[in-house]
Image (tube, rainbow, N blue to C red; front, side, top):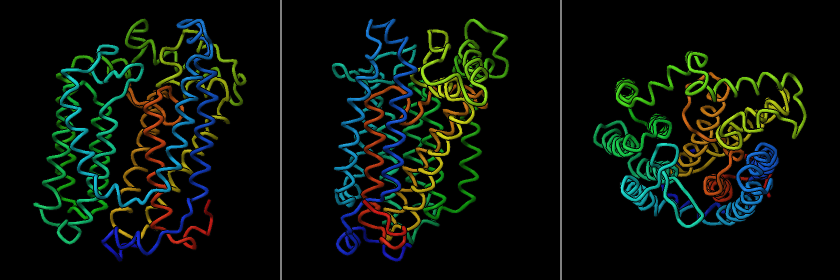
Length: 384
């Protein structure tokens, strides 16, 4: 699997011109399903906000169409380009994170976004992508030195500490957790000694404890998560309404478009809490079906990573797949009450055009790896 370390040599020898069909179909299916559910979930909110019930759907559909085109284009590109500019992407994203406290816009009490005309985006999402690609490129170069502290721990720890520190200023705990978990996973795959990862875990737990106890809003969220009915009209309100939505869906759901909680009872019903509307309208069966599609996509992403023929493509595909898996896990965990509120959206489903564009862009990178680095026979010849 990792018999070659030079991605450029691999791209010259193994380009197939074909994309992995199962992975592509799963992405498209989730994107279309997400659009359908986003339209249903946002109908009442859009009518209230803009007097146009299709307003959010039309915007999201435009971004989805553009994103699928971008995904197909990126999937056809030589993936070696990301190997070459990985550090540039990371550096640019860190620079944007520095600018957020200065020039960012505040939404719901947190300054995490940049506003460019009608478009909002979070630099933290670009930082996640930049970190995955940068770690993969560095580990490809330093493969034989990963067991040393100088090459296997220090550079990655510094990068994660800088990003985590900047996100701390943004009050963005969820992005911080995902950054640290993705980084730890890539270091584990890359060959970092486990003793350093255990030490990092202890430091991460200490950081989390410090964060919760110094950022008052985080402590309030933890308290509301433990007992939302202790503050049912403020911090616990969203969790309670989410549970009402999930519970009322039952086994088969109320039917597509027939949610009651979306009529301005559940905040963020078309964004972070859209999975609650999925449960209400499609029931246990529909929710499990969607989670199964995500599981198949994640497994296929790891399958592509395992069968990639150079170290960079293996680590990049595994890192991007892990990022997707963590976002799904955290979002569903929050909506169902398993985890405290984190502010993480559900990939392909939650409203947010630039986020959807970036997600499809990342899926394009994995498709590019499947085209250039994976033997047709290793994936059963299922290509598009």
